[in-house]
Image (cartoon, rainbow over all chains, first blue to last red; front, side, top):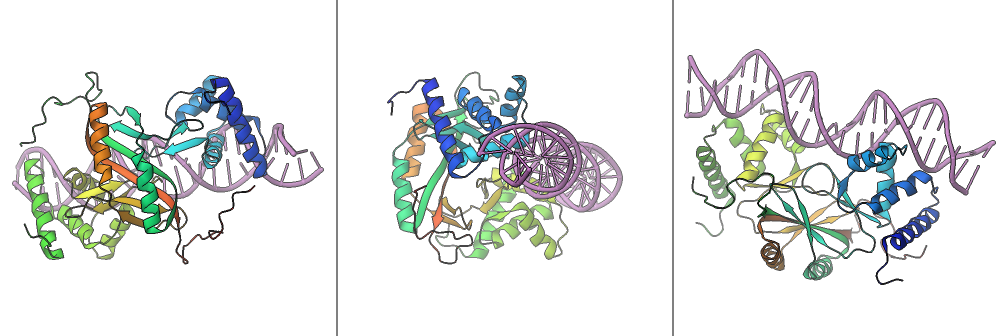
Length: 165
Length: 165
DNA sequence: CTCGGTGCAAAGCTTTTGCATCCGC
DNA sequence: GCGGATGCAAAAGCTTTGCACCGAG
C-alpha cells in the first residue's frame, strides 16, 4: 500500500475495490459504473447528482440520471463515496477513499463548504456507542456559521453583530 | 425563571417568546401560528411536517400545509423549534425550548432516534470556529449505527458481525 | 441466450408558489 | 379598510420507478 499514491494510482485502487465489491455482490461490471467512478475521482470537491450528470453529458458520455443514482448508491455502500445531506433536500456526495476522516463547516450565507478534522469526534462516537449499546457505523457532523470572507455571497451587516431590535 | 417548569408553564413561556418574536418582526399574531406552536409542544418526539399537519386535521383544526411550513420556519428562526435532516429528504423537527442541547443517534435498521449529550462537541465547535474564522451558530451531529434491541424492526444477522466475503 | 442494467420519461414525494379570500391590526 | 396571512391546489425540484432495449456473463 503506497503511503502517498498519485491520482492515477488511486484511481486504479478504487477501481479494484469497486470490481471486488461488484463481484462479491454478483453485480455486473458495466462500463457506465466505472465511467461514473472515474468521473467522481477526477473531481476535486463536493458535488450533487445533477452536476455529475451534466459533467458526463458534456463529455458526450451517454448516461442517464437513473444510472447515476443507482451507481452512487453502490459506491456509497462500498465506502468509495460519502453521501451528505447538508441541511437542504439536495444530496451532496464526495469521494472518500484514501482521504482522512473529516467533517464539514458550512457558511449559512454563501454556502461554501470547508473541512476540518478533530479526533475527539471519534472518541465521542466510541463512548456514546458503548453507553447506548449501538454498533456505530458512521457519523455526520456539520457546523453552520457565518464566514468572514469579504466576498461572501450573501454578506449582510456581518461586521456588527447587534441583536437589538 | 422556574428551574423545572410544568408543561403548562413551559407552554406559556414559549407563547410569550413567540409573541415577542412576532411583535419584533412586525408579524401578525394569528390563531393558526399559536395553534401550531401548541400542537408542537404537546408532542413528545420528533415529527415531520405531514404528521403535524395530519394531527391538526384529526383535531378538526382548519390549517393548510403552507401555513404549517411557514410557521415552522418562524419557530425555527426564533429557536423554539429545531429542524433536522436525518439523512433522507424528509425534514424532521423537534421543540427545543428548555431542553438541554443534545445530539442524535439513529438506528440504520429500525430508524429509532435516541438522544445524547456530550459537552466536548461545544468545545470542538468553539475551537474550529476560531481556527477557521467562522461565527458558528449551530451544529448537527448524527451518529448512525445498529441498535441491539431484540425487537429492532429490520433485524438482520446482527448477532454475528462476520465480514468475510 | 439470459436476465440484470440502462436510457428515457413518467410518476412520486416533499416543499414552494400563486391567487382569491380572510382577518389582525 | 389595508395588507399580511391563510387555504387550496397547482407547480417545482429531487429522486424513484416502469418499460423496452441492450449487453455482460
